[in-house]
Length: 430
Image 1 (cartoon, helix red, strand yellow):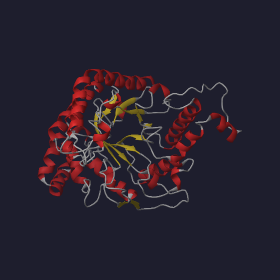
Image 2: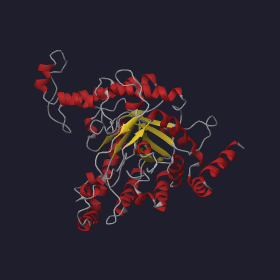
Image 3: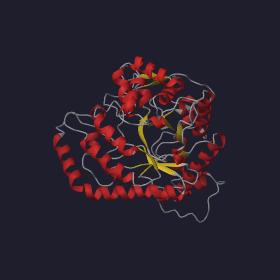
Image 4: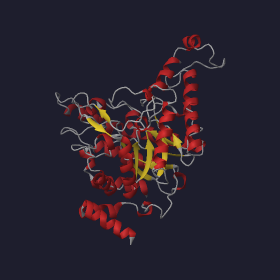
């Protein structure tokens, strides 16, 4: 009776045309009324989750003219497309108090320039992260989505805040955020993992960490400035992935210590910092990781022409010749790029196996960035997913798999292809 009443309320609230696709395509096994059934942790899942990376867009486009204006509507539409998990930014840098101990409820994000934003806000707007989490995370459970808590730890043009340059800012931000979620009964079995910093060590906004890495770029100067710092004499100063050994040691120690400290307070979840192919797997210590989200794109397999310029469309140019050149290259080089992708996915799986953890990918598989435009299309982005998902499915420890970077309603050209989304998510979950 309780489930029937719930479904009736959804129908009344969102309309039968929205509700029926959800009922048909969402995973019944993953749907649970709170308190009725425990959900399996990642390592016990028999089938992978079809995960959508909604980053910070879920909040920064939640306004009158934003594609995430109505959370219930877009969650229902995501379920209609067959997804059953979401990776989202929970804004620990804003949920937590600032360095002066002050909690701020509302922030102003300023949009600079009129170039279209792929992710995040297309307009200057205000957002209330603490309030939003209390509303949005329960909706994820309501519509059958497992959630991966993540953070890009960026300031979104909100102005200065001490936590970004505070030693221990990431630790304090996450500790206070997880405490906040736990106090409101939102830190439960619906959470599949916690990603402390996006694409570590490079593509996040935790400035203190980046400053410390820069300080270690010149080892001799660092020794002069830090005479009491312990630096092993046998460090090989050869560079790996652009970092010398002193930087690598700091990176490994920081990442593992951050996870260990948070895990001591909140032990029930797998933790990680997501990675990209730009950080070679043999260059990073993941001994404290509980899962490995490594982002892979075909644009790393070969120098695909013009994808960067086309992903930031220049409206003053005729983009058709560049797009045709890109498509010709894609067709000609697809076999050898597929071999690269197969090896890259296998390497991630093997790295995870060596550490006895699960793995997955929430960002992939064609380009990192792409845009809607009358002179472009999404066919090669979808074909890249068709290829890569099959390769990922060969590995049983791949427990969460994306279809692309573009599972957001603002990417209208691919979002509206419901048939393709259903096909690829069915493949992921089979």
